[in-house]
Amino acid sequence: MVYRIHFTAEDLTRTRIAQAAMPMIELHAAARALQQRSQPALLDTWRRHTLSRLSPQARLALSMVPPFGESPDFLSPMQSSTPDEELERVRATPRRQIIENLASVAETRTLPAWARHLADDTDLRNDFFDGWAHLYTQLLQPYWRQITDLHASDRTLRLQQFMTGGVEHLLAQANPRWMQWSPPVLKIRTVLRTTVYDLHLEGRGIVLTPSSFLTSSAAVLDDGHARPVVTYPAGKHEALSSLTVLSPRPAAPRGTTAVTALLGKTRAAVLSTIAEHPGCTTTELAALSRIAPASASEHATVLREAGLIHTTRHRNRVLHSPSSLGRALLNKPASRPTA
Image 1 (cartoon, rainbow, N blue to C red):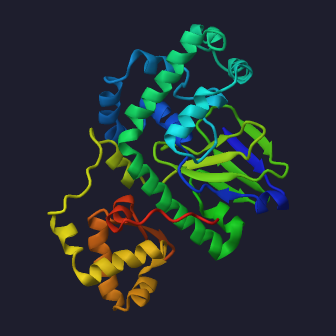
Image 2 (spheres, helix red, strand yellow):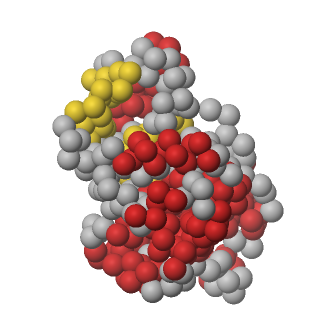
């Protein structure tokens, strides 16, 4: 399927980059990936491990999200709150919205037989939302730090693209494989088999956000009211491989060579500089730290290997930002994005 999103000048001014990862959108993508067969080398071990741990309630909830095709909008609120806040938001979905969303989905695919009772059966509804929360616990919670780091890294790159050439340059460069900007239309290829769908934003703009588990296409989420969300595969799956291990990535122990090296005055100063200036280039890092560019590059390499920073490329520049572990080591909270 090709989404053709039609922009006006007002839509361009209202287009935003998500401030943080959207937990329920990422959970929705993970639930789909769990049932697909894409990226077998990276995901099959994760699939087998996760499926063996799902509760009956989680399997109930999973049956509402097909590998491909529509699922109810109330499962994917388009917010950037904490996972716990978003799970509570889903649990508080009004009865009328459940009915309307299920009716909309039923127009395009067959729902599970039990779904007709979801809005009125309190016990069933509690089991369903308990299952959705259990899916988060199994699919995302062990890897949430990596997911948020990946989102921060991607956001740094998108902001650089925006500052280089404005919002149209951002739309053109965000993910050329799946998204093509042909002013004033953004064409988005998805895996759905219907042909073309035209979406006229009418002044709403869009929100761009990367996904760790969306690996085979971009996607558009639009409830007809809020600003539509366009989500796309993040990076080239380097981070995805770290999400498929059978246990959360542990914090680097203090005794490892890489972290011990951080006790040195210069390297600690470099890490602090990156935390204070996320998205800085190697040249900027050298100037801010008052060291040679070659030395800045060397220190950044050690910090990256220790998991204390992450880097992204924008054209011929490398951009450095602190990871969650790096901020924790410095006891610095994540900076609040302003764009």
